[in-house]
Length: 110
Image (cartoon, rainbow, N blue to C red; front, side, top):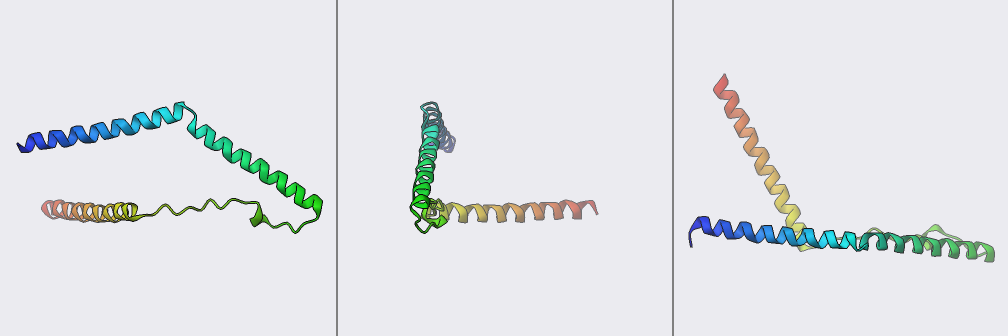
């Protein structure tokens, strides 16, 4: 297999993957998935307000932590850690390369 054909297949593969992501996100938006998630949050909030009002009327000890949902979710995993690591390495490489190019241009003009 020629090198040009290999890159052509890789490009087509990624193009198909990105198209599938696009179609998935497009249909999830059009079917109202995001709006449903927001509706679920508002229902939860209404339920918590009603629970708070009941507890106040009953004279229970009211603490804020009892009525708030913990939304601090840690999404880190090995793949996201790898992505962060690669991103930092690529960034440092690009910075190093640009610094060298600018210094080379600066030296050639002096």
